[in-house]
Image (cartoon, rainbow, N blue to C red; front, side, top):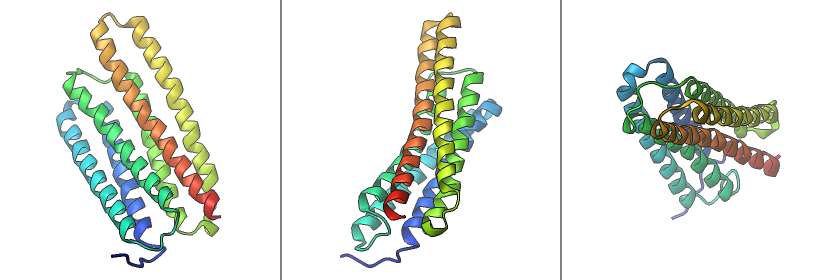
Length: 207
């Protein structure tokens, strides 16, 4: 049965909850570079955050099905919430491989990339509340440009990391493991840019 929901609260609350989960997952992933000795505990935390993100996504899509009037186009709401969840999924996938592949210690390139990822996730969390009132969005566009810049930095880092791996690794199996971890981390950063694009589409359609 359809219901009329407040146009300025329910979905925004869900968006912001999803963004908080995304930032916490990115923080945990970055923490691995500083405190790898606690990797089992940290990666367990990422797993729980992945479940939390799934729950928020399911709740949002269920609310979307039951809501007659939505603040934005339905496809934009779905795209935004699913892509934030995808960021967390990629973080979870990369973090799990550190255990599965018995990685002894993080590389400097991974530390750099998790820092880029955390910055991108943090900017998303900071700009999402601006969707509540686009007439007072302020520097929203400029903040989204920051995410595009961070994606470029992440892309450059990934190319350099893989080149360094192939040029200096003496263990081809280890090189394959790290290549996969780097690529998944880069996908998480790329997906942050997808989230920024989804936000920008909402702004353009509703300004």
